[in-house]
Amino acid sequence: MIFSKQWFRLSVLGLMMLIMAYRMFTSGGTLMAIGAIFVSICIITTAMAIILALIYRHRAWCAICPMGTLQEQIGKLKLH
Image (cartoon, rainbow, N blue to C red; front, side, top):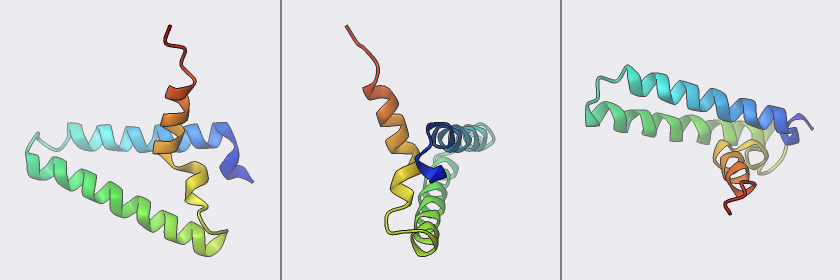
């Protein structure tokens, strides 16, 4: 399945981070606008999770979750 491919997961993470960075940059720095960005990201990812669960399989979003991908990449770092 494409969702478990590393390049796909990293692409989703990169896209989400670019969208968030762009929206933060254009928000004007107000707390309400920044808060709205995070709320919209939560709504979008929840909607994507529900759609993927209905189309593919239960917890399909977990396979490509940007937060899980980021945590996996941080976990691979050697911090000696």
